Length: 384
Image 1 (tube, rainbow, N blue to C red):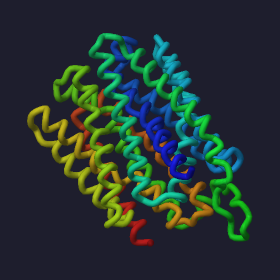
Image 2: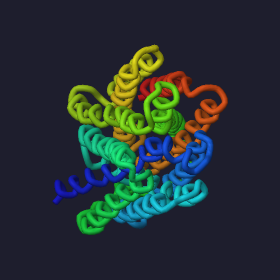
Image 3: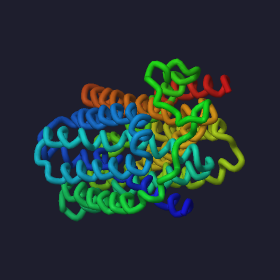
């Protein structure tokens, strides 16, 4: 039954990825229809991120009270409702309204499910599970690109993904008995670990550093995912339909990279995997900075995705070893919150730069985030 539960968790990671790239791939078609500036994608992204920050900070308490299974099922159901809400929207403010449950559904499940895997499974499973997140994140833009090419409109793309989320919700509800009896780690005296306050979490040595590293990583990933299609359209000259499909190269790189990372983790530890990923991201950004054909830009996006692949899962998996199993849920919660602060703040800032300067600055912006992240990860490794 433990192995069947692992299958359910794999499906859950697909559901986590399905909505993540939809806004970026659909936005070149959404903003002209709604009559808003291209930079307004950052506003929707910010609302989603604020919801995830709030629910991530509550993940320790929610998981202790409800358990990982119920938190996961409820959160996926909330995300499905938000996606179906997007599918009937005809105004920008309607999208902003549905972005609230969109974000609330994402944060707590992300923190709770990642902590469960970090505690109960090996590093290779964490990479492969996030590979399945990449399958979801890659499928989303492909579905949206297909729907747009067929002339059915971006609303239909959201409707299709929302219905898929409903199916996954049903699977999770039926799997709830499998989660029973799998409680979190005990505290020092053998009793169940109690939720920590934010102040106590921040006082843990290294907690602020890992939060900063996660901020930079998720800011880099979200900015690349959100603005890749617009970058390809406005700077590289692709049509919106081709750009939506082309932007999926970034998520395809993440997906294939995490598949490979699961095998490489058998030879390298989490810290080494993070360093390898950062080097590949740098190579991809160099390809984006070079002038050349559209294929070079697509290859650069794929390389950036490939480099991103091991960073997220290996950082999460290292958390129990770095901070203790009894504190890992709390630390992962604030890591996720810091990550979503990055996704909240940094993509809109780039949107402002693109609107007032040029969208051609995307690779430079991502390179700056990478440099800070590498510095913070080096500091974490030195403290181990």
